Image (cartoon, rainbow, N blue to C red; front, side, top):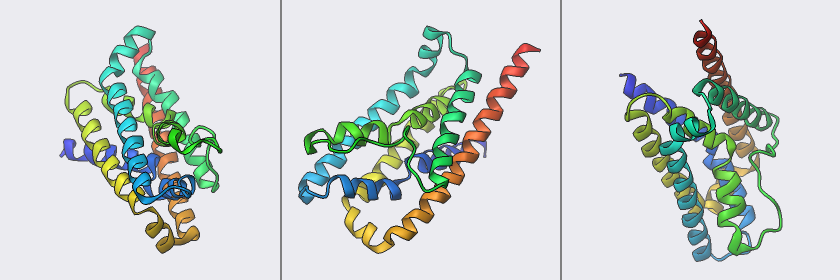
Length: 205
């Protein structure tokens, strides 16, 4: 049951911070000039890059900790703050500067920036992946990678059906979904922060 609860927690954590519905609206806006075949290729490339980035940070998280002398409580506190800030901005109906891209990028560069980085694999997503996968054992790493892969597949489908989804939902419903995801993110960020503080305090005892 603990494994199941962890999978659910990881999935909704990533779902909230990736926000496939809101990012689909962003994808549609950025690729308005592209043909459908180009949109599919851009979606595939951006999500592949995103997945590779998250896998690297999930697998090498502990190595990165040791190399830079970073502790898990420090990561959870910092990651919690980043995730909370993104969630707070989403609650206000705005996009966070930590989670948004630049305007005016050429179509050939969109898959890398701003789609893969920082929209899909922003600081909050990376911090969340490292936090989820940093616990002892292989299951946290495996669950993080598999769950994120599932979310990438969901996001890919949303991107490919982007125009249909945005037309069906409309701007108002997308805004509501974004704010709900923002609330979930803010709560997850707060929980990460609390866990980090508790671990840091217990380490001094």
